[in-house]
Image (cartoon, rainbow, N blue to C red; front, top):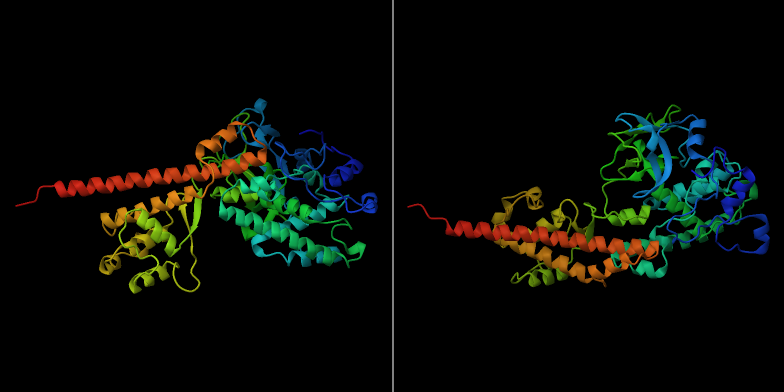
Length: 492
């Protein structure tokens, strides 16, 4: 940590807090208040809100929290800035409490305690539930605007910028080359621009003493910073109430974490606490890691600003579309596919899979632990099969499982898997660059946002190749088993 306990003084803290790269609206505003907005992503290591922030570990301890004596905040070569075990303290055994926060340290959306809070809640109520991070972000902005915020030592240590795609340059948004993520990025950008108008309209008539942001300007940039801070750092524990957890949110992600997070007591209880406990031995210099969740890279990049290489949960989304599936099935050598016009008995099963009829959810996926979305696999098996009696002998769970080997026979299974192979090929063709081109770009040490965009699309392609190899082996085994059966001597 750059500064000793206490760090920046209140005067320099206020100056650092609002001294960002955004242009102020007028010279009069520049004299009376400073923007809350965020600079765009691009630096390899984002600076903190304050140039010399207070010591976060000491603040947590001073406010009644516990920090294991071996912990430090350092720039880890693999995980980046985060919490690590100090080299001189020896390894940390499993069961040790690494961090404990008393109930007053987490920052969350609260019930109105005054007119300013009431205005804030009215703004939060205009945010759709799926963008919960914006609701919590408004609370964070409220505290960031205060010159005497209790949470200043925490806020001062937050990044000034985030590497989420809403802050990417336009060219790097295009570099993602993946329609589902592009849709989400555009959706969030449109929301921020529209919400800025709603916020300005609401605050335009609010007296200064009731202004939730102390009269300071709030625009789409500052709203984007706040939403990104909340989405990348908040935890949902018991009660599903998102909270910002100082210091704990500096533990980085791993699918094989060495620590876990525990909430003790109800969120509204005065004795509530949140702890991080070592799950196994933590070696000297090792980063303290938590599992943020088993998600595809879309989620990690959109909300956290990073990409997990070789992510076992990564997947490609596609729509269950009869025309697309007919084309894929024909490319796979299936004669007379009927995905566009399934028989009545097939329609009934597709309806049970929620892939047909009113209110159908047509989004399916390839990749992840299941390799093929269970609903997609069952639909392929059922639609390729011409035998309703054979299909009726199996429940949906069996038809949806790739572990069930050829429930409708090897011919139907091979045709279904070859259709998925064709879908993988179609998905690869939607990317404008090839794997070797992506790898060459990454070797050239591009800007961070370019690196993230290229790494994101590269991981999608590598995942699709893994699926192709996996399914090709399965098809080969089906062929070998069929050959073995045909060559077996008959009993006399």
